[in-house]
Length: 317
Figure 1: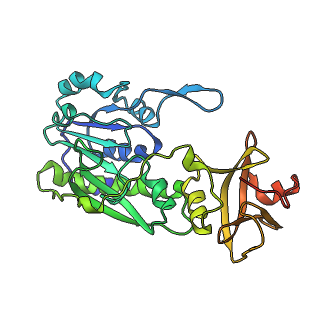
Figure 2 (figure 1 turned 45 degrees about the horizontal axis):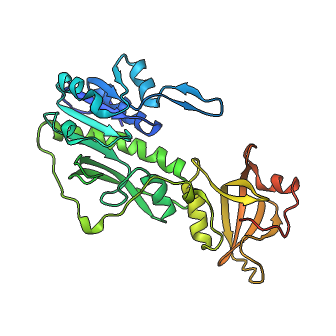
Figure 3 (figure 1 turned 180 degrees about the vertical axis):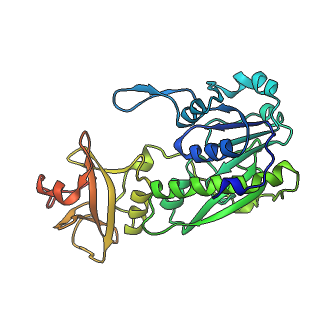
C-alpha cells in the first residue's frame, strides 16, 4: 500500500496498545500516517534458553521513533496517565490484557481493535493457530469497537484471507499482519470523521480461538490424518506439535498424509522409512513426518533423523 496516497487527518491523539511481532506492521503503518502520542505494551520478559530480558517487539518500534512507551503490569495502574494524554482514539492489536470499562470510555472516539479473524468466528487469543487447526479454508482480519466481553464489540470493517493447504500458523500470521495494517489505514478516516459503519455481531455464530494449552500441543494418533496434519501446520512455527519417542519429546514441524492404510498396525507405530521422512500409523491411514526436532536438538529433515535412530516397529505416543 502507498501510504502517501491515503488522504487522512494528521492531528488526532492516538494511543496504540500491542505487544508481539504481529502488532509491529500495524504500529509502523500508524506512525507513517498519524501522530502516535504513546504506546502501551506488556512488561519486558526473559526470552530464550539464557533467559535474557528483551523489550517487546512493539516497544522496540516505540523506542526507535521516540514515542512514549508505557509497560504496566496491570493496565489499571496507568488509567490516570492515559486520561491525562486525552486520547481521541485508542487502537489495540494483540496487547495481551483485558481492557476495563474505565479505560474503554476514555477516548473521545472510543477504543478499536485489530483482530486476526472474521468475527464472530474465533474470538480469543489464538485465532491464527485455531483457524488452521480447525481446518478453516478462510479467515481474515476484523476492525471492531471494543466492549467489556472478549472480542464482542461492533464490527467496523473486515477483510477475508484464503488459507491454503501449504499455510502454517507462521505464514498465515505474516499475511494477516499486512492485511491488518492496510485495513486499519483504509478504515481509520471514516472512524475519525464519524462516517464508519457499526455492525452487531451475530451471537449465534460465535466460535472461540482460545490460547494454545500444553495439552493442545500433543499429537493424538487416534485422530484422523487430516486433523493431525492441521495440528502440525497450526502449531508451526510456535509452539510446535509433539509426540513421544522413547519417552523423549519429538516435535513435528512438517508432515503429509498418504493413502497407505496399514490396517494391521497399531496407531502410533512407525510404518516405513521413506526418502523424505518416516511414516506413522494413524486412525485412518498414515502420516509421513518430514521435519522433526528431538528435545534438546535442532530441527532436522526426518530422513536424516531416521538414519541416526532405529525407528522401525517403534511406537510413538
